[in-house]
Length: 549
Image (tube, rainbow, N blue to C red; front, top):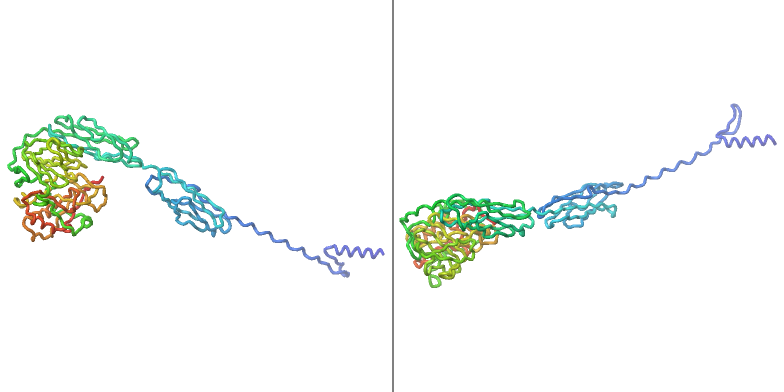
C-alpha cells in the first residue's frame, strides 16, 4: 500500500511539473506539454480627432471718409482634426454691404470679401461674418468694423487777389471772387466777410455754402497812388479759414482830354459810324478766327443742335408792322443823364445813363436799349427797360468804353446774358451796305446752354452741366469751303464776316439766330437768302479756358 501511494504521488508531481523524464538508460513516461496561453487582445483604435475651426484675426477695422470706397479684407481659416483637408465651410454676413469673393470652400485657406460703403453715413458700422462647417458645427465669427469719417471742411477764396486801375475822379469798377467750401456739411456752413477800407462795400457780408463774393469800390475813394484792402472771409471749423483776398486799387492822374476824333458817328437812330471800329483792334470781337483750330467736340455739339437746321437772321425791315432786330441811337454827350432802378443791381453799372426823349427800344420781350454818346464814344446798354423819365427801370445795365474797351468782372452779366456788349456784335446797315465790310464777330443765340462760360464772356445762364451744350462765349465760324458765290452781294458781305470772324454765343434764344439792327433800310429779300446756310456748315472754334462754377 505504501508503494502505491508513492506512485500515485509521483504521477501527480509529474503532471504538475513542466516535464517528466528518467535517468539515462531508465524507462519512464513521455513529457507532458501544457497548451500555450491565449494571445493578448489588440489595443483599441485611437479616438477620432474632432474638427476644429478658427478665423484669424477675429476682428478687422478700417477707417475711410464718407463718399469714398473701402479696401477689401480677408481672414485666414484654419481647420484641424480628421478630414480637415476635405471639410466644407460656408460663410454668411449679416449686412448686404459685405460681398464675398467665394462664400464656400474646402479645408484651410482664406476668406476674402469686399465692402460696399458708398451709401453709409458718418459713424461706426459693424458687420458679423459667421463661418460654419458642414453639419453646422463648429463655427467661427469675424467682426468687420468700418469707421466712416466726415470729409474735412475746406474754405478757399479764388482768386486771392484782384487789381483795378482808375483815373482820379472816375468811378471804380465793382469786382467779385468765388467762395468755395468743400467737405461734409459744406452746403450749410456759414461764412462771413469783411473789408478793412472804407471804399470797399461788400454786396453780401454773410452766407452759407459756396458762391460769389461781390463788392463795390465806392464811397470816398483815395487819391492818386496805390491802395490795398484786405477782404477776409471766415468760416468756423473749416481749414483754410480765414481766407484773405488782397484788393489793389491804383489811382492814376486824369489825362488831359483827348482831341476830338477826326471821324465821329452820325447822330440819331442807327447812326453810321463812318468806318469807325467799335472797341480796340485787339478786342476779341475784332479778332479773326479763320485760321483757329477746330474744337474736338465741334461735330457733337453742333449735331445736338441739329446739323440741318437753317441759320436765321433775326433782323430786317418789316415784321409785325415795322423793323425788327435791336436798334441803337447815337446822342450828344450833353444828353441828360437819368438814374435807373435795376432788378440785378449788384451786377449792373449804376450810371447815370444818357437816355434821350423817346429812345428806341427793341421790339421784343428782351426790350434792349442801346445808346452811344458821340464824343466820349461810350456805349450804354440796358436790358428789359420799362418806365419813363424819372421812373426808368431795367433788369440790368452795363457801360462800355468803345475806344479803350471794357471787361466786366468775372461772373457778372450785362444787358446780355453772357456779360458781353451787344452793339459790337450786331450786323449794321452802315457796315453791310455803305462800307461793304463787316470787321467783327456777330452775336448769336442757342436755346440750350451749359452752366459755364468762355472768355470773353463773363457769365453763364443755365443750370445744365451737359458737355454737349455750348457755354456762353463759344465761337463758331462758317467753313472756309462753303461756296458763297451764289448769294447777293450784301449777303456775301455777311457771309465773309462769318468765315473770318465767326459768331460769339451771347444769350439764350432760338437756335442759331444771329442779331442785327432794326432798320427800315434793310432789303428783307436779300437778308432772307442767308437762311439757306445750315448749322452743319459751321464749326466750333477750339475752346480753351472754359470757366465752370
